[in-house]
Image (cartoon, rainbow, N blue to C red; front, side, top):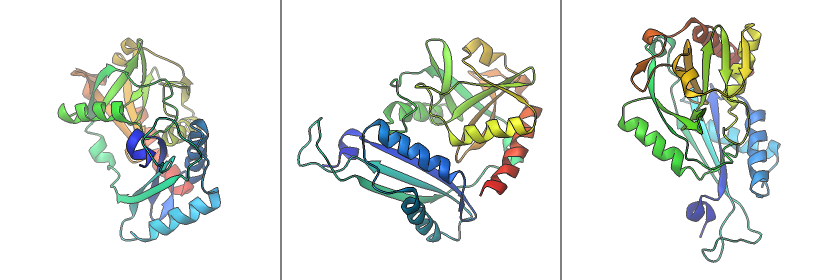
Length: 262
């Protein structure tokens, strides 16, 4: 009778951990709070308690220098399956999974993506567990042996099935602005900070598929992928299939920033 199982009625977060330390803890906990507020679930713990629980879980896998902590809070269990609900006790689920950051040499090979129409709902900035559309897109990427599906809503490129999207044109980085059609990624914010630190201009504006296809560089980002260069979209090469120099600068800056922030 848990509403997370029955309806996908819940919020989740993924915390990347490097050498036992969480990257972007404060930002992830803040986004968790915003997600719970958005769907009217009372946060069962304060930030201090969450930090304590997450750190305890991290210690169970000390042999893994890199972990992804998955945290899910559902609305809780009811006495029957019904769409409405009363006041329930939230259910908490957490797990730790090892992951391996891709090396720069591997990333320099470049990855491919395909584009599809964004059929998701109009509150994508809420990190809800209701991810069926995202799962369908991710599976399609797997079936086509590509890294990601790039989503397009009414002619505008939004993001990907499980990552944010950047393009570079004339030494300027572009990414879709915050709003209801993208999830505001914590890694996305770190990349923007890195770009500003490196004196690279960043514009958070909407762009269409035509702009995407003639970009000098295209990247995707997420907590466990970090920042991945895309050199082929819909079987069409980007930058002649070569990873760009701006990506390399941002990748190096991200690695340095990651070491400082954790």
